[in-house]
Amino acid sequence: GQNIDQPTEMTATEGAIVQINCTYQTSGFNGLFWYQQHAGEAPTFLSYNVLDGLEEKGRFSSFLSRSKGYSYLLLKELQMKDSASYLCAVRDNDYKLSFGAGTTVTVRA
Amino acid sequence: DAGVTQSPTHLIKTRGQHVTLRCSPISGHKSVSWYQQVLGQGPQFIFQYYEKEERGRGNFPDRFSARQFPNYSSELNVNALLLGDSALYLCASSLNYEQYFGPGTRLTVT
Image (cartoon, rainbow over all chains, first blue to last red; front, side, top):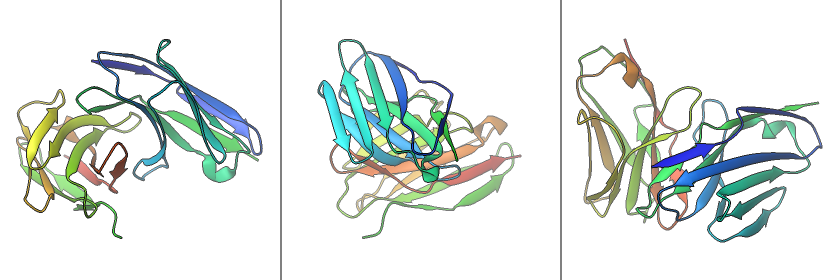
């Protein structure tokens, strides 16, 4: 099975940087995903890491260390619209996605 | 192109009843997955279908079943509904590694 841990809540100021950590213990690994979910809406894909290292996509970056079972999502130049839940998900060798409980990020003016 | 569509949007059922939720994937996507998301938690995997075959099943009781049709649309069926089945049910379709989620069906069991 999968055990995925991420902080419950984080608060940051508009224009700042926030780093959301995710640690996982899995019986198989075939990629790590980050999703953004606004209240009452479906999750939307942000990033995918399968190899160690940093993937950058605009204001969002994601890092993976497979040996440490660790990933982080970095949100730069925070905007009010970034207030949402951020979900870390691990895919196993059977292509099944297991999600963490999500980190609620609140951006304050 | 249309995204993943789900119907109905909202549904209210009584304990013991049966429910069928429907999902149409993005055109060209052959894989459909179903998730249950309870308020305040991440989505929990229920089923995955690929080319009409069940590819994976999560830790859900046999009251939950699903199928995929030749046009790759899918149905999720839940029998003998319990209060604890109240949740947002999400369908996701995929072509490669990225899953695209539909808007979900909000099921309330009273």
